[in-house]
Image (cartoon, rainbow, N blue to C red; front, side, top):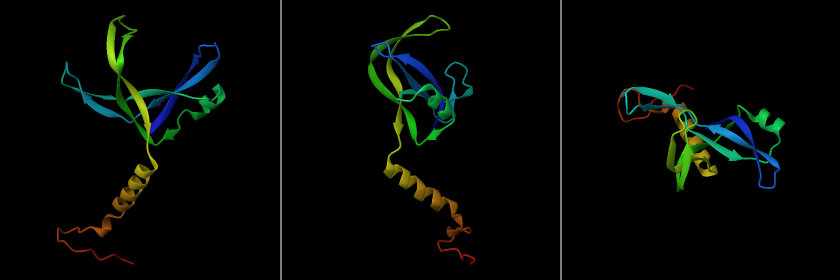
Length: 132
């Protein structure tokens, strides 16, 4: 799942404004290459929208099924605002919606895991008696 955490106004080539939504994935723990300590982070991506500003504001906090993945792209220059350092990057983070088939599979798995009483509690390969 990803969550809409914000929006930004951009301008088309013809000068007309439009809005992009800022999406954030779940919390991930990564290890720092410099300190070998773990830190919490989350992947972010932006998607264009056809919404007006009030709609974008109202959507903040909405969760959507899908993930944010790294996509290889043609090299481009990125300037780190804080330091002014210029980097050449070859990837972007993009939103990939969850397919209907993945949704159904996840739903079945969730239902199965919710009823753990069907599994043996004593290590013996036989169905547990279920109370009715």
